[in-house]
Length: 208
Image (cartoon, rainbow, N blue to C red; front, side):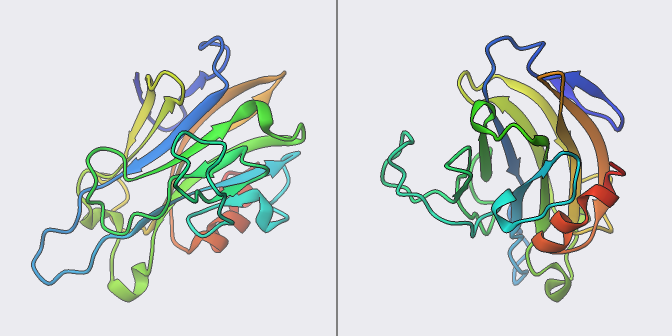
């Protein structure tokens, strides 16, 4: 397992033969200050096609995306948010950070992605951050991690609480497809905005 630093790269699929499904997971500690607003961190993911900016809402997965009936997943009772015929699915909205371990998870089936998808960019932002006057510096034990969705082996982890004290959004890095293999590139970028604002600005943010 890697603790990622800015600029780090690793060959996700080449170094992990047989890997076809990955989880991007986010977690954080709930606000324990009496009378304080909940920390509602949202995990989202955008797909870029041929290195171009997001051109459709169908290429952004977040907690309020279209819901599936869950029939293709282990827990058939859950209406998971999904995009692209469930190539990406979301575990659902966690509004407090009260779960043990991961609070929100996005599962990606790499084999189901359209051929022109060249970048997969997960990101987090704090819901209603401006209204609640919140940033990641106020949130304890916030992280994003990557694991093998089939084996649950953790591949990398990134701490969000230390370096983003003035920001309400974070892009820790992205997956890039090169010669048929997926490579993870760590970026460590703090920014502000809602899901739409962050997603639409990714090519500029990442300097692609």
